[in-house]
Image (tube, rainbow, N blue to C red):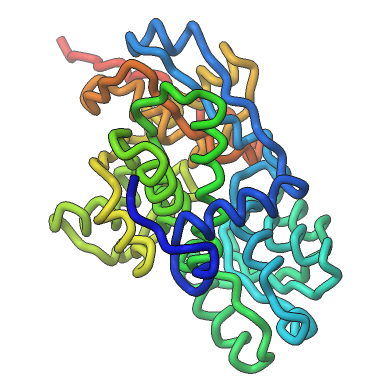
Length: 339
């Protein structure tokens, strides 16, 4: 087990004590989502597969964990000034719900192309919405500028130790639910989920293997991890919009470098295929970002080998109008040879 400091060290860094504090505090806030087995995916991958159903989490994604822990730790003075966040959708809903539960004002900046379902859900949880820019980065810059003017607390979607500790509770639950897990496959956007999960899992079970997965069309963390390709992308466009981040987090990447064993990328076809198979065979709706880890597991080129493999389905907030495009991406293209 990695050495951790005492419970007094629940401060501005990541410790196992902080993760367990989050685990305790969030027990009455978030759902303890199921860890489901699947004969279908066992047969397809030749290993025991366990699906962590964070698509069934409150707000439809794991993000409510980190947002709730961060907002729970605000002082009364900070709470009075409200919170501001930037998000492609799932973090927005988590912040909105957590802020409303505490009775404080929240303003969320979102890219203009954010799916309508995520915008409407965020408004439904009580946040004020500002649509701006074509990407998360543009929404982020606008939110930071507004935060400096208003003095509200900025709730970062990933690069924050409280947020990382909240996301880490996913790993704590998974190992409580199935102690035999020897591998965790985790999607990566900015890195908040995998940094927390990797730290907690390695702290509790040092021999466990942590594999991160990015969309091949949004691979900034992969590029940084292996020192190949641009570490700040000029543009990102992927069906996995929840992890369409142009640049890795600073704090999260420090944790990724230390605790993650491998990072792989997966193409749009395998992400869409995983989404479709989850819907058709498991009767569960998972968004592109949420299906990315499973997409990698289904791709033989990823070469993920284990006995007991935990896969995090990180979210289920999908715009149903995209189902046809998902089906088209999941269907192999026929090659026509001219005679």
